[in-house]
Image (cartoon, rainbow, N blue to C red; front, side):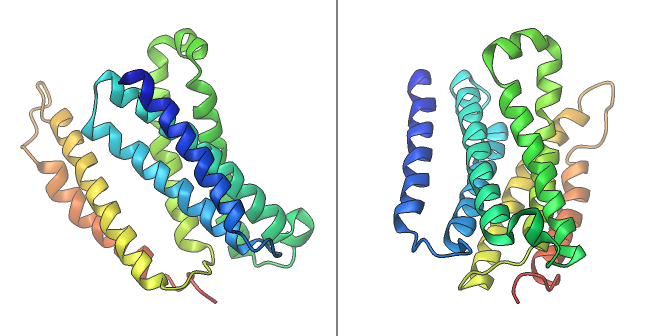
Length: 223
């Protein structure tokens, strides 16, 4: 089972990326490709993070690695179509606002981290990094935060945007709850001895409100 998970994920990623191109009207400035590859990158990043608290066995680790590489793949496709075809590259960037440029910068930082983590997941490099490899992989959470910042501040051209934001918000709250629960188990171990569920009880309401504000009160999702 372990050796079938990764090839299945890679095959699915290639099929999805091909399907996006086949369904594209191939018109400039590539709205179709930009939006769909952004959505797929976000979905695969979500699945990568979701595997962490739900599966710690060898198959789960293999799936997480394959999902992470697929996330980087879709992020690169999104960056190409979004920056060079939609924005117009460096020359076109001067016609956009400074606020939009900062949003793109957050996306660029997320992309750099995803690419670095993808390279760091190569088997020979994992062996060379030794005990430093696992802490390095936690940079994925930084990339995820930057991705959310980029997503909630960049202009989005989508029909039914409100419904998409509601569903995405719900999924993110579930992921945050799972990660906080895992962190709770860590901080309540001796010798820390913090009260049980403290992190979840404090962090979940605070982060839920922050995400709600970012998703539904920042007026940057549509023209």
